[in-house]
Length: 277
Ligand code: NDP
Image (cartoon, rainbow, N blue to C red; front, side):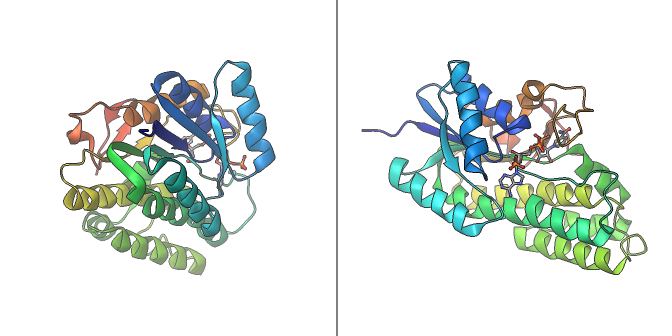
C-alpha cells in the first residue's frame, strides 16, 4: 500500500510550531502530521488540545539537540512510511533581553540549537524526503538585520559560503569571537540570535543548491522564512501576530504545488521573497 503523505514539525508543542501542525492537519489531504516535542508530556498535551478541535496529529518525541533522538525519529519514519514529505524546522530558542548570561554564553547556547541542531536535523531527515517534498526552515528577519550589521568583508564571506560546511565554519568563528568579546571589532553583529538565524538562511541556500544538484528532477524545495513578530512565549507575548498568522508563511511554503522551483533556496516573509542580501 502506498504511504500517506507525511508531514512533521519540530518544536511543535506550543507557539508557531503548534499552529503549523494545526494548519497542516487541515490542509494536508491523505496525510499524517507529526507534532513533535522534546518533552513527551508537553507533546501529548498539545496533541490532546488539537484532538479537542477534531484534528488528529500523531506524536513523536524529538529533541533536536539530542542526536540519538533525531536518529531514532529518522529510523522510525523510514521503517513506518519509507520517507517524509514535509519538514518544518521550527524549534528554536532565544534569550530574553534581560538575560544576565554573557554575550559569549548566549552565542554558544543559541548557536548550538538554532544553527547546529537545525542543520543536523536537515542532514539526517532531508535524505528521507520524497520527490515533491518541501523543507521549511523557520529563520527570522533578525537574520537579515544581522546580515546588514556585518562588515563588508564578512558580508562577502557569508555570500561566498556555498556549502553548509562553509557556513558552519563562519558560525563557529562568530561563537569563538563572541566568547573573546571581540565580535564588534571583528565585523560581526551584536545579536547572537540574529547571527544564528543568518546562519540558517545561508545554510538553507547551500542545502537547497546541493539537493538541486544531486536530484534535479525530484522537485524537492528547501526554503527559509520569517513567521513575523508573533504572540508566543519567545516574544514574551509582545508580537502582534497570532500563532496561526505566524504559521501562515511556513505552511504556505510547505504546501507549495509542483512547478514552484523558483522558491528553492530562498527566504520568505509574509509569503513574499525577502532575499535582502
Ligand atoms: P516558542 O518559544 O513559543 O516555542 C519554541 C518551540 O521550540 C517550543 O515547542 C520548544 O519546546 C521548542 N524547542 C526549543 N528547543 C528545542 C529542542 N532542542 N528540541 C525540540 N524542540 C525545541 O517560540 P515561537 O513559537 O515563537 O518560535 C518558533 C520559531 O519561530 C523559532 O525558530 C523562532 O526563532 C522563530 N521566530 C519567532 C518569532 C516570534 O516573534 N515569536 C519571530 C521570528 C522567528 P519547549 O516547550 O520544550 O521549550
